[in-house]
Length: 205
Image 1 (tube, rainbow, N blue to C red):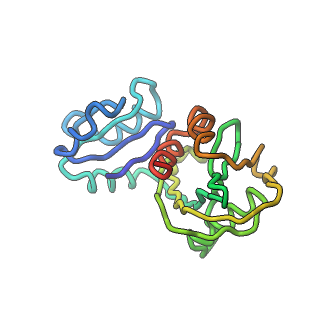
Image 2: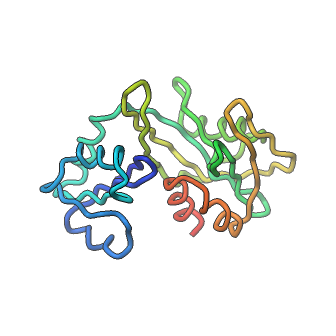
């Protein structure tokens, strides 16, 4: 299944026979490819507050996803869910919302290298160690009048940093903080992006 967040609302591409798995577990509306085009589904989430999200049912979700991709310009980023020796997680506050450290890939840079670099730069810590890749997230935004799709590669990381965290102010990071799982569930979930919340839910269990 492919999921993209549009205006912080999910658009999920599922097969007709998978739809029942989501019923009762989602606030999104179920829409068939027979009733709405992908372009109209995207515009619905971009321009109205009518739906909390859309589960788009089709015979071939992969084909539907490729059609959606054709509407967008791709931008790639990478970041990390960083845990320390106390089993605390590294969060940043940017533009008034909790987030995970991440940033764009530089020219000819691997997602792994970009993720380590961005975490180190944004939080002022020594380069963390990558444990494993955990997820890729997708969300859209408008840049110079064009719809841009940001694909973010995420990695679970380990840090032994014991010093003070130094938020990267030039990147509008207001605060960097180590949080327990309980603090993440209580404070972050109430004030973060839907894609980050879903990533954390899957990763923290």
